[in-house]
Length: 347
Image 1 (cartoon, rainbow, N blue to C red):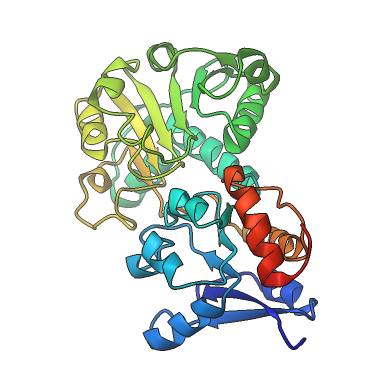
Image 2 (tube, rainbow, N blue to C red):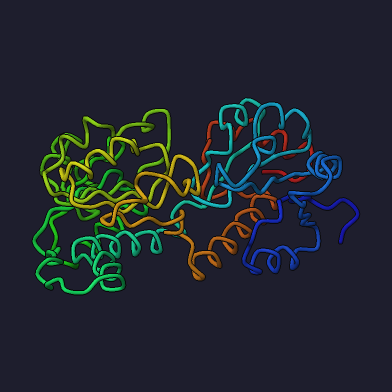
């Protein structure tokens, strides 16, 4: 280890060993892991030394005092970068980071394959009524197979809300199953959406025409509550709703009512307002809901890739490079000046 190492600080959440192994190969980088249940004084001491804060993306996993807020940033004079452990950055005040000349980076796209595979798996299970059949077969006898008759997904219409990394992969898989894919994404042009395997439509048209609606947009002020009672009412009777994006985009109470009334035939919910949801959550009482604990992107392969790529991105930026997954590029000029002053390496 060099005399003046660059410090990366994280909390002791589960990480694939690939992360620590990559940092260990760098003689001038020191990885410090803080105990979430440890003494706050020790954590603050490490954060005051930190050049990079590797933060959890999960809003209900990390105590709010350790969110990357303006108050925390003020106590971290050497901090150059906040790196989220996943694609989301719900735990980071990006505007405050930009104002402080701190860049924010994430791991967007790295677990897209895992999330897309779960999305299709949930769609298949709901359409074929696999989970429902499994539950019923374990507790009842005397019913006919036809009572659990499902549908093929081939020939059906899938509406993708947000066609970024995950949405594009979902469209690819859905096309392979013979589905027609519609997409709503105000930040992607018509031609690019077509290149990604879908046809660009308005949100209202997508809701009205789709047999399946799948959410893949980020959680922002613009998208919070976007799929509300009105949106569910616009959907086809008998349609299926799936969300693997972020809790809060869909109104859970409105979704329950749409399912309870049989307006929707099923739902797959991987992300929740509160994670995990309480055991008495109304959606957990319905057999036509597949409920998972924000695990769509949590596979052995995805966790390895996320850890490896997060470390690689941090190593690169600490060597003076521009990171490939930069959330706030507007912070770059101020960051460059701070980086050169603190680290002594030109950017």
